[in-house]
Image (cartoon, rainbow, N blue to C red; front, side, top):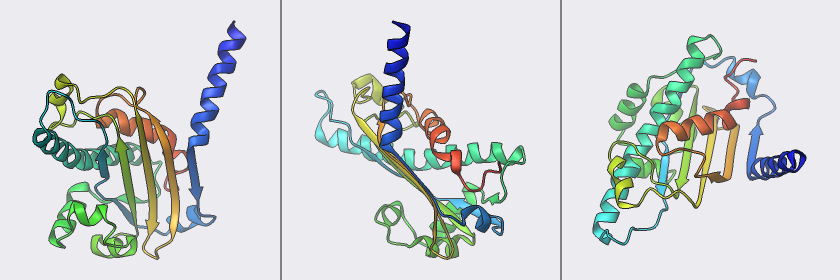
Length: 217
């Protein structure tokens, strides 16, 4: 029985790893050694959960819009927080630009969340605007509405689904437009990522950043 359980765990772990894709440029670790700083831009965040029966379409669209807006900034801030913890321990080879500065520079340049979502600006253009050597871009689709302030009360009315498929994609581009690193997964286990963005970022960081070029080994 014990051996059967072990085989089942190995099987599902293999499926999860198959759903994940990792890429690292051959010269990524060498290139980041010359970087002075990098920035994390607000995530693209899309809620794909179904509308609860007791909610009108107008209410649903309004609440989802607010939740997505809040989650973009929350994911960005949580990701930065995890990076800063590594930085404090001396495990990062470059400086992370403060999130407040990143967002202020984006705002001054007139760059909106819609612009980021539609990839209106190239990564190298964002690097120039933000005055950094590289940028981290993140995109998440979740069938589970995560609690991020604006959406925290929506679990009560049934939008906080516990099943369904979610996906994530994280990329690091340098100012020369080179993709240095990418991690993506087609199927996040919504039952494993908790009910808030902090849990989501914890989940992603454990799996996605094992080969993050800025992390020293």
